[in-house]
Image 1 (tube, rainbow, N blue to C red):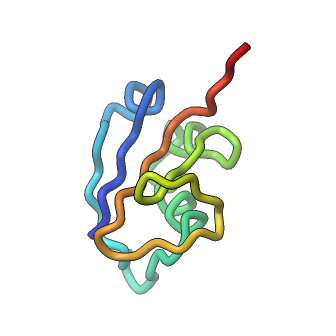
Image 2 (cartoon, rainbow, N blue to C red):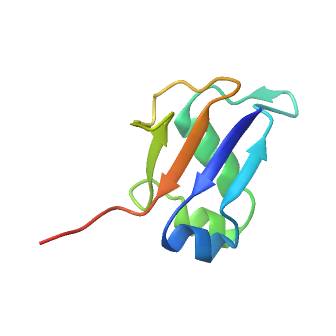
Length: 86
């Protein structure tokens, strides 16, 4: 099981800050950030919109991650909105 955390506006829009999830979804094993993102987007339009590639950054075990970053049992995965500054 992994723990998925949501921060900032994502937490408000998805109405959750934490989601425990088994990496085996049906007959499919979620092995990467990209697979996890696609799986979460199937939870509905709000999830699809807010977790679209480019709409949310991802960290795995507090390290910035890319779409091909592997995930495994007991990882902590965080989604957060892109940061802007000036």
